Image (cartoon, rainbow, N blue to C red; front, side, top):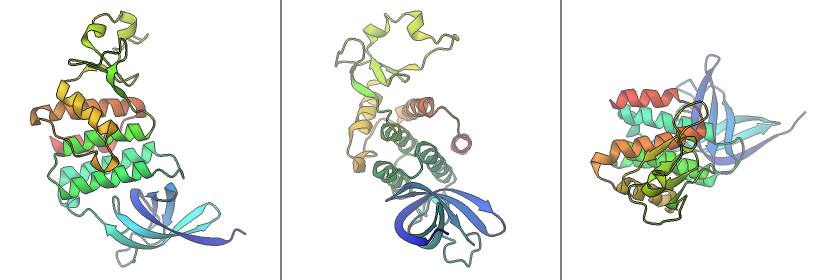
Amino acid sequence: MAAKKSFPCYGLVLRETPVKDADKFLTVMSDNRGKISVYAYGARAWKNTIFGAAQLGVYSEMLIEQKGDFLTLKEASILDSFSNIRTDLVKSALMQYLCDLTCEVSPEEVRETGTMSLILNALWCLSNTDKDHRLIKGAFELRLMCEAGFQPQLTTCDSCGKTDVNGAYFDMENGSVICPDCYSTLTTEQLYFEDGRLKPIKPVPPAVLEALRFITSADGKKVFSFRIDETLFPEFSAICESYCLYHVDRNFKTLEFYKNCAL
């Protein structure tokens, strides 16, 4: 019989699934073991001491008990519930999507300090600043792809190496930019997939490109400290989303819910 042992961690709840009458199965992003699956006995009972910490998007100091491969949440003390998000429908919907996306991209039990810092900073900005939710969403999607190994090369044209790429196109398949001159020479085979679908190569306004460059290269704590004109918010958000979903290769119901709420 496997012996029980316990370990402390700081953890953010990325997903919660009801089990039986009062329990939950949690997916937690932890500081020392990455994404872990944790069973929380009685977490749906409001009198239980772990009730608050077992909610989606709550960051806590946790004590986890391990027996074999089975992990159980024994104690938890809330550090930040990002309460301002929970009173705003759009922000709450976005939090669900960001947690869902992080859960999808992160492998089991692989310590990822960059990803954990990113999701915590995103939720903090969403809760404590007036930064537009579209900018937080787009920056998170793009930087998460960098953390997952899909960092685009946005400084020079992928074809000719030119650094002056105003009016550039973002090649989302290859994670690169193409200057207008090189784009005009692309052949049909380079523009379309074999099944006739148009490849994801989209024009990028210069100001949006500068924002993308900043997000991919900035220190982790400064990822969300950029500004662009409000007229570019929709285009910025759409470009980051398209790049992210292309490489994750799936759709999210939480994303659709967020979009419906943001209409």
